[in-house]
Amino acid sequence: SFNFNPHNQHANLDIQARLLDTNGNELSRNNPAGLNAVINTNLASDGLYYLEITGVGAGTVNNGYSDYASLGQFSIAGQYAIQTTFDDIQLVAITPDQGRLTCGTITPTAVVKNSGTNTISGFNIAYSFNNETLQTTTFTNTIAPGATVTVSLPSIQPNTSGNASIKMIAQIAHDDLPTNNTLEKQFFANLSGVTNQANSFETTNDVLISYDNTGSNSIWERGVPSTPLLRRAKSGQNAYGTK
Image (cartoon, rainbow, N blue to C red):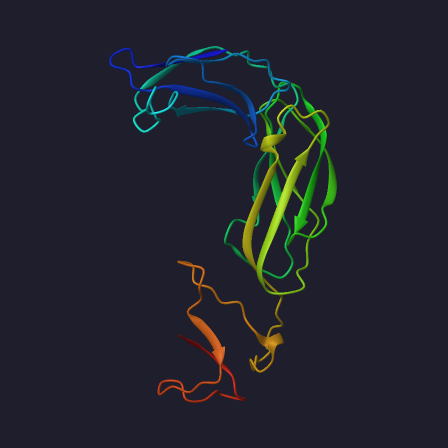
C-alpha cells in the first residue's frame, strides 16, 4: 500500500499513480477526485515492479483544468512486504568480454553467485553463440549462500570471422528471482591462422578482421591500391591500407 501526496503548500500537481510489472503492463491505477492518489493491491508473485506518477487534469478547461500545469513536488509513503529469496542463482559475469577480439577457439566462462539463502547443489548454463539454438551444460558445483563460482563451458570453434555474440542463462529449479539470470556480450571473432604463411589478400578467404578500438568503424580497407602513397601491392592485386 502506497499513498501519494502533492506538496502541502500551494499544490498544483494532480496525481495519477500506476503500478506496473517488469514488462510495463499495468496492474493497478488510481486517480481519485482531489490531488492525492493511493495504490493498495496484492501482488500475485514476487519480482520487479514499478510505480509511475503522472500529473493529470480533471474535467475540461471550462469546468476543471488540463494537465498543462499539473506539476510539482510530491511524497510517497507506504510499506510493502519483502519476501525472502530462498533459491536464487545470479549470473554475475561472462566471457568473452564486451568488444574483445578473439582468435581461434573460444572457451566461454561464467561467474555465478548464490544470491539466495539456500545452498545451491548443481545448476545449468544455457548458452547460444551467434543466436544459434540454445545448448545446455550441467554443473554439479555446490554454492553456499553469498558465494560465487567460475565455470568453463565447452569450447566453440567459429566458422567465420567478424562480429560475434554469446548469450548465457543460469538456471536452477524454483528460482525465486529469474530476472538476474541472463547476460549477453558482443565481441569480434577471428579464425585461427597458420604460421609462416603469406597472405595475398586476393580472395575473400584472406580477409582480415580490422577494427578501431575507439569506434565501430575500421580505418583499414582491403582493395586495389591506387594512391600516390600506395601505388601497388607487393604481389597480386589487393592490399590493406588506411582510408
